[in-house]
Length: 249
Image 1 (cartoon, one colour):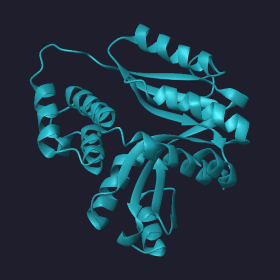
Image 2: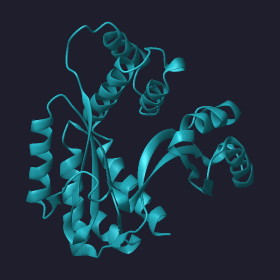
Image 3: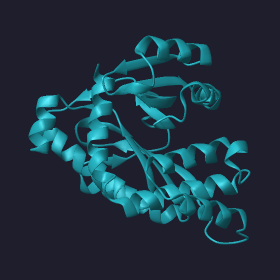
Image 4: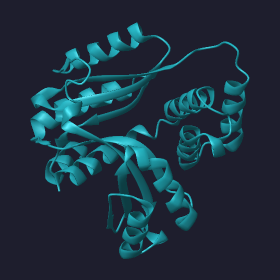
């Protein structure tokens, strides 16, 4: 399916991006700090913080680094105040792009994001200009070894999820955002901590790209992801495997 292929395209690019551990850790620490400040500094009582700590654990962040970030946020009377900001726009070939950021300076981040769009053949739009082409979902991932496809689907439906898709690489469970934490906790009780768990934007329609158009779009997405304020980037594109292999070669 286009959405599944598009997801693999993104994960392929993410693999290279995640090699830059310093930038990845900085983003995770920022999310932990914001989560701890906006709720209790105890992951057991703060779902957003618990999700951030899980992501840090999956990225092999040292436990003492996580603990320091939580303690710093809990004891902070001042310091940087980060805000959740979402930007929307169009990239090359009319691909819809959603950018999620955590920033202490809206003007700086907006200028940087707008510049990235303009430099790479896109245009920044107004809020909600493209989000109608996406669904906001809770997404939980497990490795294939934790359960069979049938067992995972049964457990996911019992927990309140909408669907579970399995292949040789793993299981992906999706659910409404309002049920995300309850579904994740139910699955964690049964199968242990997930490989990943977060809220994501999933496209309802996708634009299939050839080699020329795909190259331009990937440059835009890479430029956005290199911005320290940007946490996540989503886009409604599909790159056929043959084209992706040429771009990666």
